[in-house]
Each structure stands twice: as structure tokens, then as C-alpha cells.
Length: 424
Ligand code: AMO
Image (cartoon, rainbow, N blue to C red; front, side):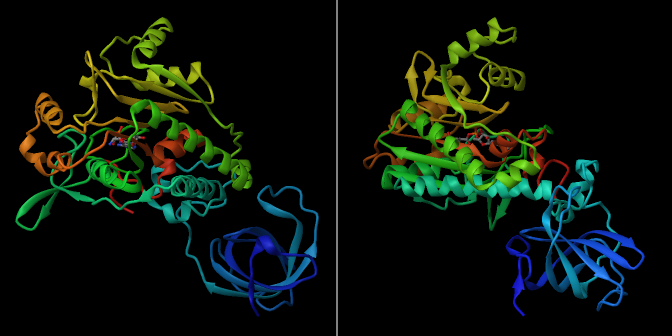
């Protein structure tokens, strides 16, 4: 008999189901269990006399069930199919689960995040948690599809690098035969070389940052969704970010209504607001945030911007050069072609127009106290016909956090890596 999935069940069918035991209720001569597979949850009824009635059942055991689909009217099980149940003719325990260290079927999640992360493979069985990762999968897939359709080439940048890109202090060192190497902090330099040669490129890649932050917004391993585009400037490239984030939210609304319901979220396709860094500083100071020209945005300032412009991606552009990395184009008078984007209370992306002139690049590196010799391969690449170009990077976990209003970025990270956590 071919296996059926719970979401495909129709009344009257004889079916074989496989899945996990989500809930058990014993009522003397009847045993009710909720069976969960990747497509849903269904109530199954096991009557005395049916094959397998005497099997020892534990929560999360893997079972196979043969039975008939019957009409039913279930009211109280929000996640369970409401109009049908399974009359079991045979139940087999395929792999019995031991006593669970965390509860999978808790109605509201009360187990602490740390403990849940210790047993993450159980945690992600919870419909609420699985919903987060279904949506995250929709986010990254929509990003890919969007730029692929726009004629961008997906590139695979290296994960082991020789020099820092985002500042020297937060690199993880690795032994590379006789030399020292680092884990990539970003695909930055490589996507630029991709763009000056292939014009439009994108990538989705893990990045590693040895930042000592222990915050609800920082990870030591994150995933970035990057684009880089030749013949574009900072202003033009921001539009791509606006469009793709709007598309991502539209796609979630279309493809994940069940997940949004489970997460009790009402999403809106965001608008976009563009402010120069200077205007943003003026506005924030007028609204009571202690900030002056030359300051980075503290989390409080980012949250304030999001409060002032709800359901909006807020772009702040023309940041001071001193606050941006060496590869960001200097527009003059200390102003750069660098920008940030905040949404849902957090910074989700940053980017800008790049330096494509070797002499300016050398000057910028020196001004950031970096040694141009270390970047020779990169600088030299711009000597052989390099167009102006621009790009940006969205943090996947940050965007998940923003869209789903997650209090902690770890909630949107399958197996987070932070200062204290290297397993599971
Ligand atoms: P930046 O360092 O701002 O820029 O990173 C871009 C985006 O990546 C995410 N991100 C992080 N997410 C979680 N934990 C972290 N520690 C972390 N660090 C970064 C954020 C951030 O906005 N190369 C440039 C981008 C470019 O100019 O194209 C860069 O990496 O969402």
C-alpha cells in the first residue's frame, strides 16, 4: 500500500500513514492519538481489538497506521484537521521514542530558549517553530528566484579568505597548511570581482564573525543574501532591495497562510522610505533620541525609526565615510555612497556604491589603517576595465526576525552559533 500524506486525506479512503505521535489520550477501550507528518496533524482512533491496540505508545514515537478516513467534527485542536479522523485498523510502532527532554506539543511555548536549542531537533517539530523555518525557506527561495529571473548569475564565493573585508577585529582564524587564513566575514570582495566581470551577480552564503556581542540580534555565523551590479550607483541599487523585500513578503502571504496563522501574525507588504543619514539624525534628535552627526545608530535609534514609519523599510543613505568600510565610494565632503536599511526594528541590510578606481582604493585602505599590499589581488583586478558598481547584503536571519517579529535572532536560526554555543 502506498503511503498517503495527512494533507491529502479524503473521507472514505483506506490509507497508510507514517509519522510521529504528537499527543495520546487513553479512554479505556479507546485510544486517541494525534499523528503528525510533514504535511499536518490528524486525529486517529484506536479501538480495543484493532491490531496494535496493546502496543506501548510514547510521545514522538515513529509509527505507521493503516485505517479508514472518516468524517468528524473536531473543535478544540487548532492545528489538527477538523473535519476528518482516522479509524485505525492497524498500528505499528516503527521506532519507540524515549522520555522526551522537552515537550513537543506544548500549546504555548514555555520551555526556555537555551534548553530548546539544546534539543533543537525536537524543538523544530513544534508546528510553531517549524512554521518559522518554512517561512525562512520561502524568504531565501524568493530572493533566489527574483534575481535569477532578473538575469543575475548566482555565484559561490569562497568561505576561506586571506584578508579581512569588514574590519580586522572580528575574524575567525583558521590554519591553512603553512599559512594563516580566516573564515569569510562576507562575500564582499568576491562578489565585486564577479560584478565587474559578469555584470549582475548574487549569492547566498554563510559568513562568520568573531564578534563578542551577546545580543538578541547578533550571531557568530549568519547567512547573507548579497547582490552586486555593474553600472549601478547607491541610489539605484537601493530600489532592488525595496523590490525584493516587498516580493518576499508578498510570497509569504501567498504561500504561507497556514504558517502565519500558527504564528498569529498579520503581515503587510512594506512601503519604503528614503532618508539621508543627515535627515535621519535630525529627525531622531527631534524625536528625543540622543544622537549626533558621526554616530552609528544604536538599537534604540533603529527601533525609533521603525516606530515612526511602521510597516516600512527605512533606508538611510549617504552615511559619513568614516562609518563605512574602505570599499564604499567616497562621494566627497566626508559623505559616502553607503547605506543601511532597517525594518521591523532591526538593521536588515547594508550596502552601497563601491570604489572601482585603484588609486582611490589605496587611499581609502590607508585611511582605514589597512595595508594595500594585503589587498593587491583585489586592487589589481580593477586595473583591467572595471565599471562603477554597487550592491548590498541582507542578513537572512535578521530579515526572518524582522518579518516574523522574533524577539531573538536565534529563534530564526536553525542551529545558532554564538559565543557560548557550538553544539548541536
Ligand atoms: P554588514 O556587515 O552590514 O555589511 O552585513 C550585512 C547584513 O548582514 C547581517 N549581519 C548579521 N546578522 C546576524 N549576526 C551578525 N553578526 C551579522 N552581521 C551582519 C545584517 C547586516 O545588515 N559586505 C557588506 C554588505 C555590502 O556592502 O554589500 C556587509 O557585510 O542583516
